[in-house]
Length: 164
Image (cartoon, rainbow, N blue to C red; front, side):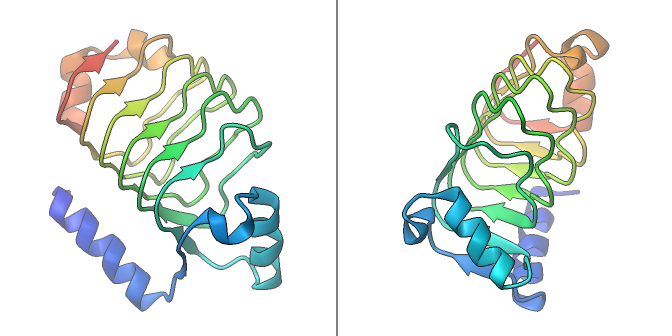
């Protein structure tokens, strides 16, 4: 799927499905658990976050119904992270370095910047990923042994370097 089509589809879905747009985690005192309590009170709708979402110190297992992060997403070293939930789009970089139990990118299709998957020792699948706008680091993952750089480039448009 072409990059332009992915972006158009995500924007169209936001309009059609009435995805709850949260400008920033700052509105919830930069506290993921407060945001989750708010989402629970709303029936856990699909939602997007404007700007960056930095969760490297949060204890989370899934991102749930989060579908879009307009900026960067930092999930560095989250031991318990099992799933990106319904996440489809990250406008900036995505750091998943050191998530040992993490297995798949699931619904994620687009990362506008770099994608760091180093040390994701149980990573089995890149899921629906179609585009990485920067470098892609797959070193110390099972995928670095299963695929060559050429194989990855046939599956995903990667603008930058691929580290295996």
